[in-house]
Length: 603
Image (cartoon, rainbow, N blue to C red; front, top):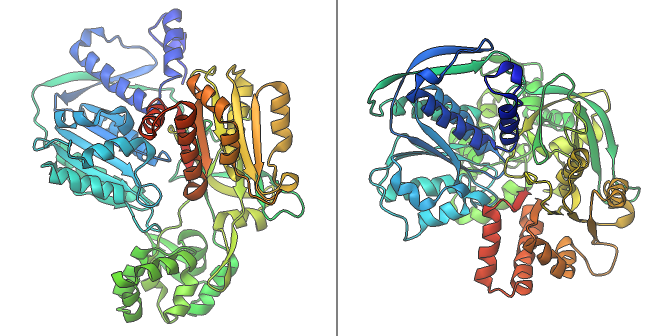
């Protein structure tokens, strides 16, 4: 967004200063600033001069108690919802302040009267990185009594994980224990969260209308006539043409990694390094056929899904998730069909067996293992989850390629439960999508994984395998913008000869000075496996020196093993090279997180 002199009441010098500021603001900061300016305008209507390119409407707004929207997010969903709901509440005349949990002093919660909390659960029941300190404080003995606080929690999660929405549940229960009063009941959202989130917000909005009004005031409701936004979103995806779909791995590799280039020409879709692209895939037609045969369902028979008619075949291909089971789904099926064997599996004493079954089986297995073949599609299918989009890190720069977006997709294939299994989206790219085909996609913003605003700040990037994707975007962006800061990449995979993803590009960036330093770890090229954390340790003195000089660390990739090992290695480096205790090293890294100098995009 750029202000122009010709359509604003500002001088050329003021426009330049504003554009410099606006370009560095996050979405949350823009929302806060808009609320602040609205309050300033309300105190002095004489300061407003009607301009030809804006529409001013006088509306009745009441002074109210302030509402604080706190969010904790790992991938950006909670932040997007928080900003959207904040804008709506501001439009309703409420005083609203939206803030990320790591920018909020947790002890100040005792000063608030109305708090809306939107928070995701990450991994196996963990809070997002930017919510850890807030959650620790709330659960500690230092947390104050909150008898004057009114609150509600919107919990985001993925029901395929055992600890579904655990962080939101814990905060909700803890605030109640501290004496706070719910504005509305918590809602736990699965990966398809839009409707549930909107339902929560509707109930919240209704309750917030009861806030005590003091004095109505006339304020200006300002909207720009020439504001341009994309028509496409998560709920209205763009059909992008596939321009390129190639295998990055060499012959003989154990892996298959696809480089995908999508055309977004005329879609007005904007993205930044660190964002992701959501792709709505289709289920494997062969698996769909097997399901219909097992059930004995007629593929052309119709059913209604949210007021729209679908054939059974198309519903299984495009609407329902059929490759992943979750505990809530099994519970609904057991209850609906009074299934004794399945009910037994769900009992607490069979917890480990249940988790193993969910991990390694799909809907087809469930049908055969629990004799569900004679189930009606109208009974069974509504119990399933809607198929969620698959998120892939942007691997290109918008400034370098404004009409395209590039992705790096690792193809998932494995054997489990006596059958070969395939990743839904990755295998579709591998086997059934060619150049010229179209896929449904949208931009998924992630302000929690951003390059430094100051391009002279050194950056350290750690991304083995497909975790390299956002760092290709980083390098394209820095090259295009002429960034001056140093950059250091740690990359790893199995074999140098077959798995060095984007090798020519990295070598070109090294030669040109866009990339300052690169360390690689190919785990299978020697008898003893070597990973990126081992290379970090070898370079520990220089690594710590970069940190002391203000470098920002970025980590992308697998959470369960790589990200954990990298995190522990960073702590060891800080402890040894900085001559710090374990507690001091932890505090040092926590400070880096607060300064947004340690950011992770892990999955």
